[in-house]
Amino acid sequence: MAGAAAWIYLLAFHGAFWRERPTPPRAEGGALPGVVAVVPARDEADVVGTAVASLLGQTYAGPFHVVLVDDHSSDGTAAAAAAGAPAARLTILAAPPLQPGWTGKLWAVAQGLEEARRQAPDATYVLLTDADIEHDPDNLAELVARAEQGRLDLVSLMVRLPCRTWVERLLVPAYLFFFQMLYPFAWVRDVTRSTAAAAGGCMLVRRAALDRMGGLATIRAQVIDDCALARAVKPGGGGIWLGLADRTRSLRGYPRPGDMWRLIARSAYSQLRLSPWLLAVTVAGMGLVYLAPPLLAATGGGLLSAIGVGTWLAMTIVYVPTLRHCRCSPFLAPLLPAVALFYFLATLDSARRHWTGRGGAWKGRTQAVRCP
Image (cartoon, rainbow, N blue to C red; front, side, top):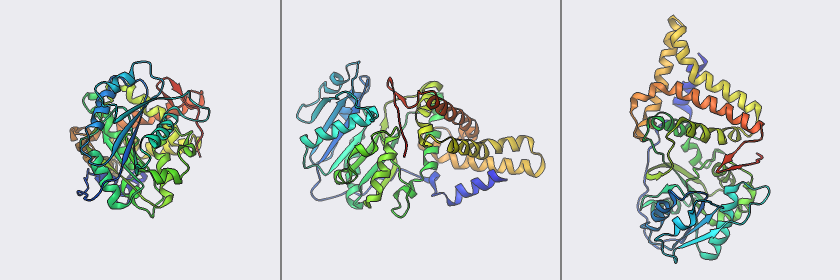
């Protein structure tokens, strides 16, 4: 019964999180503000060339410069990024040694922001993006148009994630679904609500908002840096827009179950603020919402079985739009409880890794973190 009540709430009162669609803004006329992109890159030689080319190929007519920070790569990332790129539009910076109290990515981004101020001192916006993102040619123009029209401090897109292999088709859509459930995009966009989130692969930030929050030093220890940035920006009043990308996509695949497991385990416990209490509540909630309905359908009998079947059907219907957005078969929707069990176990493993001093592992680094 409690699981059914939970799904009634999620369907009717939780920001219609499951109904999100890509929505490009209307065209913006007039003078265009300057933008500088900052791209941290660590051992990304296989994809960084495509990512940089997609940035330099933007149709945006305003001033635009790209700063790539080579974060101690060992695979020729800097050379791959520079190949064929005009030096006048791309600056490659070697990151200095990581300082105590910083996560590796945020330290690299902070150094990139300093270089960006030297290269483009008059830029109004900073595009924070990753070295494994291929941007649609119109992406920057649409981001700026939305920011200008709404006078927003932060515009972010959840880029399209790859769903090529059976593992990706089974597990990746749920990553988006659970993110939307945790941070309903409509609530993020509502200035009267405290809900704040962003997707780190694509974030256009007003430089004045970064200055107002005191720069990245205020969030320097955060593993989930995108949502930490959103939490720091939103109280300033400029507003956040978070949505789904249609054509901008991630180049990083997750073809094996272990790839997705590591992605979840890296940050799930940090998302819970390293709190055993929040972990216990989350584990109980996931069991109640996702696992109890099919178990009740199979073993409840009579009315209880009917409630279990109805609840399972409700979660199946709610999951279909996310599968369609990810270009996956809607016939995978009934498997959501099994997928949730995978995420459930990976979340427990995330806690175990933190408890054993191996939390926040990324590109050969184990990040020591603290949460507010």
